[in-house]
Length: 212
Image (cartoon, rainbow, N blue to C red; front, side, top):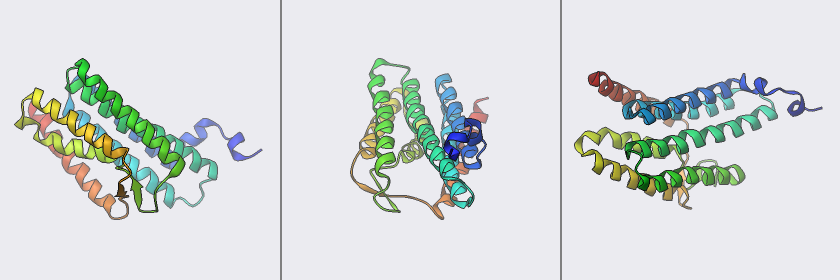
């Protein structure tokens, strides 16, 4: 019997990169909860940390020399499923909630989730174009851009801003499914991501503090 047949599910859950992935899932679930509650700054913080954990699970996995093939395969599947939650379901619920659950926001929510499912399924089969290039825009870019755009929410009426983020998310979905080559950020870019997440977490945390 090979290690795939012998290992229990919880054995894989104790693998360090997968623990990191699960922390990303927790961040995404918190983001979903706060989006449903209408606490959008807190939801943005949740998705930002989901991205950070998503980047770091791969970094940890590549640094571990004693991982089995089964652990690597399980981690890839787990990461892909969590990505659908973080970068598909979360922004879809965010859009619906920000649009006050108006029926006309439902097609947009479906497009976001369907796009994430199609893109991740395609990526699981074909992978990268090369070691540094994606086909189409990676899904995590969508929420990085959404978080930045949300910094300017106070400059618009709620109804106007809801339409704006609807349009932006639909445009990004089109880029996700396009054949346009886009760079795969890695290496020193992770430090840029850490700074970005910490800065925006501080800004949105300050916004939340001033609402109390």
